[in-house]
Length: 140
Image 1: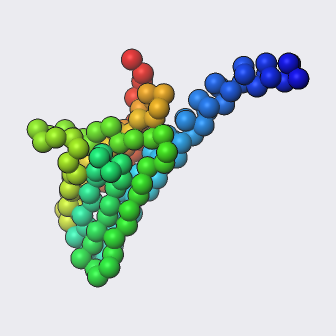
Image 2: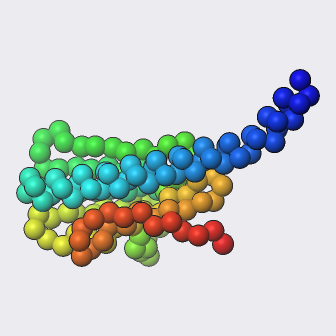
Image 3: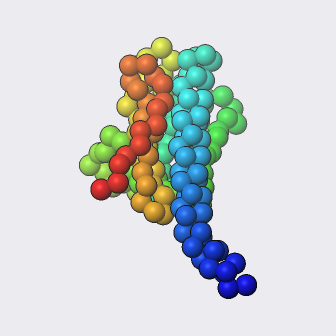
């Protein structure tokens, strides 16, 4: 029993660190998919889309002019929205709103995600190609 307890005690930190990393990767992929969906809907359906990002609520929303169209993406437990980029002078708690117009250049959107262990990822929309990308931020 002592050996089992010792093995469990030694392996627990690495297992929990792995789970935190998986949650952050999953959240980053979900944000990429969410933003890509909004960009595609604006282009293919020729609808004006609004994307709201709220660090305070730890969630993203997508709205369209179509009746009853709204989507919400909540971050998983242990992953928070640290910042919305580019940063503005307004408080970071306030939701940021981005409009996606059909046929126009997508706005610069960046969402910085952080997990409990301080690992960071930035999901950005490339304003040239309109493709969301994940950037791994090295720890300091």
